[in-house]
Image 1 (cartoon, rainbow, N blue to C red):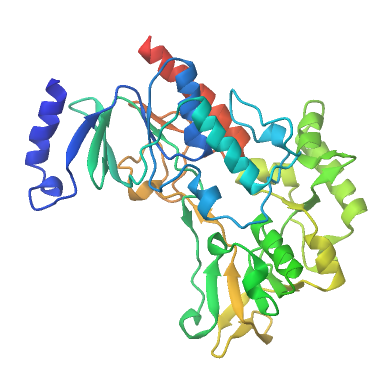
Image 2 (cartoon, rainbow, N blue to C red; image 1 turned 180 degrees about the horizontal axis):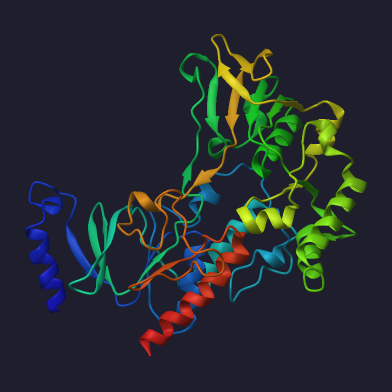
Length: 405
């Protein structure tokens, strides 16, 4: 293959891959697209391609599929949406799974999905650089050990590739444990301790509930406005009911319905320190990708006083002390940062047209962010969860299938 000979010749003159640099050992041509990331998005893309008869190669930096789910989630986690909105293309959940599958059940589903579609990722392959070679017309994907060459590149590393830990003054002198929620598994190790949870999204809320269930004393830092909705309304999942209503009504009317029903079922959350945004939950999601919190019992613990709501942190002090923006100070044994994740695409993809260097997400808004130039694609960056990833995967497979024809 002449292009592989040309690539090897280029590498011999490339200081990034000279003889003193032992990063590169071999060059592999991939007939179909290279998919970076073996999470749900990458698996969905590979399965849709397989169904179209298009081969692909999945690269994964970890040693397992769905590493975020397997290695960086807490034990009590369940899908926040009903399973019908979380299944990947071409395969439903087993009938005996509950409406909201557990973490372990979802992982089993993904493992069965990979087996069903014969998806065999290459594990322990951290991509350090991916760029399009204009002269050759190929994508060159480099890991610590190998260079992969392909006509198409599918970025499936997702919105949650790296944990976000904001810098807080005094972290080095606090003295107690400070950890990101990605390292939290269970409240068992915090039994009898005072724990401050920073972040009031779904993870922060559920971590607080888990801490309560393990006899810890959690406090929740609420820095911004937040929509809290019941997970179910009128006997149906809130998300499912919303999707049904949107078939007949505009977003703002559906938002009004959700807010009125939430007020009837949950009461005035502002009285608990959880002030709602001025924009409705669905409109906020559409405009800014901010997901509402679906309550699974945390609100009741806040109402009972088992979970204390705090203002923002001003700084951390010595001897486990925390000073809040309202001037109050309080002692805590540990701090858990439920402060979310971010994309890591800008750190390795040498391309600036499709992905933003600022947040690592596609520049084009949903539903047009799945395709770039020169055979570059993105799956799982819609801020619409597994449903959005499935939509992307189908479009990508159809587009690449046309190329192979």
